[in-house]
Each structure stands twice: as C-alpha cells, then as structure tokens.
Length: 517
Ligand SMILES: Cc1ncc(COP(=O)(O)O)c(C=O)c1O
Image 1 (cartoon, helix red, strand yellow):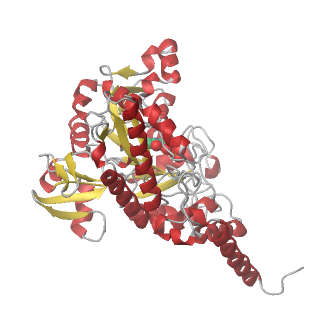
Image 2: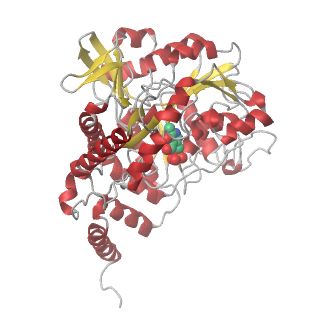
Image 3: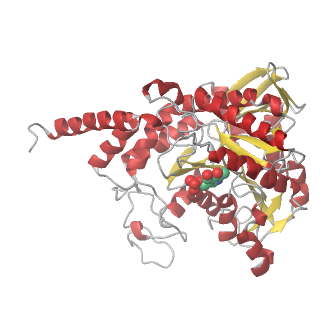
C-alpha cells in the first residue's frame, strides 16, 4: 500500500496516528490530575512507583517527528532546547549532554582547562569539598580528574552538607572548589556556601540534578555583599519570572532558582527527575562565557572548533589557524585543545525535552503539592518518624506551614522525594518499612548511595589509594541518612488515591509493629 499525497501530508498522517496510538497506549503515564483518563487505581494491585516518566501524546509525537526528520545527532532540536532551558533558568548557556553524570564530569573537567588563569585552573591533587551522603557521580568525576574529594558530613534533617564543617575542610593552596548537590530537591545553604567560596576564591558547582524548579532567596544586602551581580542585574531588569526581588518580613530579598548561584550547575533528565528525555543532562554555564567554550570542547571530543553539527566554518578561519605544533592552515575541525569526550545526546531526546520543558511548571507545582499532602497525611506519626525540613526552616506546622531561621534566607523546594527517617527508638528499621511498602506495591528508595564512604568502591580506594580522598570527622549525619532514611515519590504521576493508599499502608505497618511490641 502506498500513500497518495505529499511528503508533508504523509508525515502529518504518521504523527496523527502516533498521537492516537500514544493516547491509547500510555494512559498510565499521564499526570496525576488527568487520571480520569486512566483505568481506576486498585489499591494493592496497581503499582505506585516512586517516580516515572510523565508524558502524553505530545512527547511521543515530538520523538517520532524528530526521528522521521532523522537528523539523529544533536542538531536543531538540541540547539533550541539549550536556549529554552538557559532562558527558563536564567543562566548564560546550557549545554546538553547524555546524562546528569556526564554533566558532572564535564562541569568538573571544564575547570581543569589550561586556558584558565593558573590561579583558577584545577590541577591534579587539588581538592574539592563535597559531602558524604548522596549520589556517587557527584563525586566520582573529582577523582577521575586526579583531584581529591574532601568529604564533610550531612545534616540528616535537610539531607544537605553540614556547612559548619566547611572551614575545617579548607586546605590553603589545595582547596579549589565546592561541588555538592541540592539533596532531593532541597537547596543547600547557598548563602553560607557562597560566602565561603568568596572568602577563599573558590569555584562553586551546584549539582542541581534533583532540584530543577527549586528557588532560593536571600536579603538583597547579603547578595550585594556576596557580589552576586549576575543575578542582581537580571532582577534589576525585572524581566525574568524566576530571578526577581521579593518582599519579605525581613525586607527586600533576591530570589532565583537553584543552579543559578554558583559558577556551573548540572541537570539530569533521566526518567525519575523533574523532567525527562530518557537519558540526558545539561551543564549550565551560569555567567562566565568562556567556560562554555571549554565545556563544549570537553563534551565534543576536546576539539578547538565550535561549529554546531552539520556546520563547517563558523569561525570563518577554518584553514587559517596555527595552533600547537600543527602546520598553519590545518583543518580547525580536527584541532584538539583538550583531552575530551563525546557525551552528546540525540536530537530526538532534545525534541522530547522541549515538550517536557513546557510542562515543567505544572510538574514542579505537583511535586510541591504531593509533598505537602504526604506531610499532612503522616503528621501524626512523629513518634516513629523524623520528617525532612527545607534548608533554613526550623519547623513545620499543618496550618502555618514553615517557620524560618534568622538568616533571612529561604528555600522553596521542588521536591524530588518525600524523605522520612525512622527514629532509632522505633520498633522497626527503614529496611523493614521499605520491604513492607514494596510488598504492598509502593515504590520507595533509600537516599541513593547513603554514606558513600561505606560503599565498596570507597572501602577499596582506602586500601588501594588512601590519599585519593579526605574525610572531615566521622560523618555521623551521613550514617543516620544511610541507616534510617527512606523516601517516597512526589512525582507528578501520583494521584490523591495513590497517596491516600501510601498513607493508609504506613499506618497499617505501624499498627502491626505496635501490636508486636
Ligand atoms: C544528585 C544527582 N546527581 C547526578 C545524578 C546522575 O544523573 P544521571 O542518572 O542522569 O546520570 C543523579 C541521578 O539521579 C543524582 O541524583
């Protein structure tokens, strides 16, 4: 059978059928507020994942459309996505890569470029301050670059680094950067970390992989003292919806998304994250244009040339350069400034990402509402659980929400998950609870690698190359997170029925444990 009509009409027909197929096939992946389109939730039978892809026929159409166009490698969709993401966040550039782990690798490697001034260039043996509990690929690229991660502890209440250990971790002449994640969508104390970085002239890389959509605010005078001019300038212009001045009880504050405060930040677009393109990530160059050139070079084989894929002579000097010991006029496309990688994703992934970006505000809102719903539903279980608090919050209350510390700084969390810590005196452990939830088809996770220092890889490194990392103190907070914490999902695919079921199952678990005491 052959189609009668133009190529465009044929593509249009394929895409219409694609939408129809996707509508039928992927109903369970729709956002929680569209669940009227999905077969009823059957408690105990229908799985309640901790996270997952939330999409509709729009993303599937975009994927098929881009695949039919068959550009394949990063191309027009990627270029558009990079611009749209950078605009949304309010950063200078975003570079797409094939995962959040690759983004961390590129972010860290960028700072090793020989094109940086000697005082800022990171060399083997230099130190990065990071924290003990979290995801392994926040830390691995530090060691892969021949540098030394210096682990400080985590605060079990926020999941973030214990910033009062920063000074102790500092090693004059060796410490060059701070690299840490905003844990589970809870921003770390950006004000304190930036003050520390400013004091010692250090780089700050924000691993924002789990925190897309979080905002952080600080009184304007603090922002001025910290020289955060790149954000103050945007707020002064008054055009960016997320980078702005807000009036608070303490006066005027500067508010901006996480991932825009330091030098470089990273995102992951793996399915459990705030938006997805299957695999994918981005390196966000927050304000220094030169870093984009180095990051792009490391991403794209280490090359000196910055032509986009399919372009040949963007610099207009393709056969006029003389670099290294190459002959003058050697093709710029094959001149290599760095020891690079190839970490680009496919254009089809970017096409999916562009649709997800448009849905991101609603996804973020859903995550916040789901966290609040679970917090309310489990509020009476404080005898057994300690609940997470946003950084700078002192307490949570059903009616008044959060109370805040006296720093004047605040967080608005775009939660990756709902973390609870089982109290040590409870008659059960986090593993017992995890198993029970699992048996009842409720997805749950521990805080990634727990205390990374207890992982086989670090135990082995301590034997093989004890000088390859440093630890400040005993990391009891990271141990608490490893031994007591567990998180449920907050992802936008959850419905109220699902969350009511989660709450009911947790109460049932507690009752069974009380009966056994
Ligand atoms: C904090 C953090 N950083 C980095 C990553 C790595 O992202 P990816 O899975 O896309 O490699 C993850 C993964 O979930 C993460 O949670």
